Length: 117
Image 1: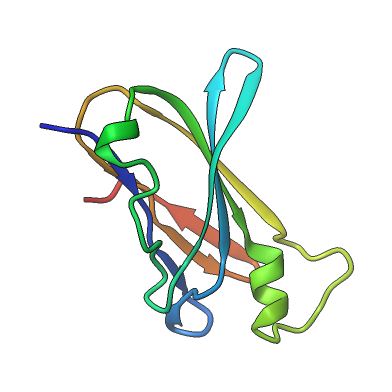
Image 2 (image 1 turned 60 degrees about the horizontal axis):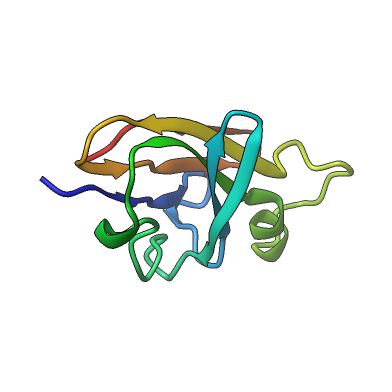
């Protein structure tokens, strides 16, 4: 089986996919953090391409950074200063060559994630 990485962001407060949310992917090696890619979610809350496709996939430690504050501002969520959730980092490991799906369920005051399929 070949490995690749995807995500799906759902706005649980509004009951819809989170369109226009910026996501950054970093590879973590010890204390080093290397930006690999920046993507934006489409109208289905997904990226138009796999975050880490088979040709670029390797096992190791990674971090997805979801720019929730900018998304919430753009949606008209009442502002706070500072916003409770602004940038959401999710650090995880990929130890096998398979499909890793890291979704984000988002609201202005909470979020959850899991290894999806």
